[in-house]
Length: 90
Length: 279
Image (cartoon, rainbow over all chains, first blue to last red; front, top):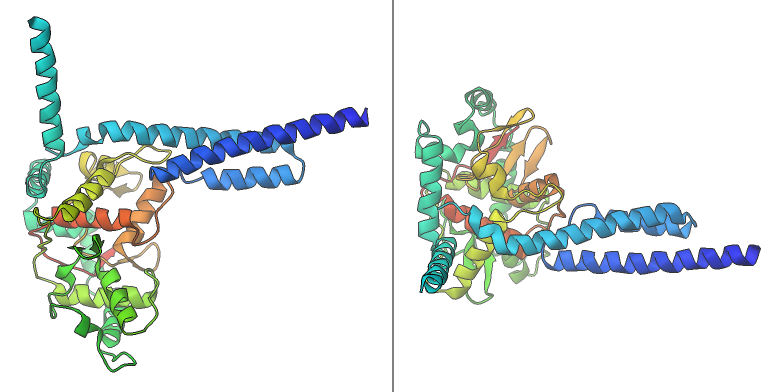
């Protein structure tokens, strides 16, 4: 029973790391485009802290919020690259 | 035939949009001025240098009262002392600048061909210190704010005349980069600088009214009553960026220097009137 629980925990931890890496990759992409949002790094840090105290539910929730923010920031940058000229005073 | 004409029409329309977006700096400035003069026909052009106090008459009365005993006066006095204090090698900061007072403030921001970058007043001061083997000043340090406050005070009454030499590709690219930054939405709230300070200029945001962008760069550094201290123009940029919940850039980053270049050009023809006082 204990072994099963440990295996499940290890699986969650690996899944957390995968999601964390994905969120960080998107955050870096947003930053490179000059479009990073204010809280993304803080959410990632909080997620890591939660993971380090084995609170994986909280860690997963935080990393998902960070990933969503980073993804939206990347999309925002791509959208603005196409549309900003429409706002120029003429 | 009809299909070909439609395709041609789309291409021509796209080229016209592109041409408008890439209008030269002077076309941009004239359109900018015309927009704000049309939005606020009762405000004389020169008054735009006073920011929101050109638009909000009640706030203007309070501001004029504050100007009776200017809260930035101490910064100007300290800056005066720092400016006239010899560096350890006996040279003066003034020796680094091509212009003399009162025209030093007005030389910046400018595009530097050698480095391929926009040089602001703060960067020029630090370049001078480094040239004389002195450590750089932090861009939000009291010494830097005091020096820029003094140079701004000395420049009062002179006209903003920022140059974007159209035969210098780098200058035009820096200007265009600042322009793109200004008009691009960013952050969780999805706002561009222009959303607040062009489209919504004069509108209320909770208890405050939004200023017009024309004249934004003429009066910095400013004493902000709510902070109880002086801040630089780029510190204000960072505040706005944070307000729309985007990650601010470093002070004097390429992004902010290019933005300052674009916005300063938009204020050409107004008077330098720093340092200022704001809520």
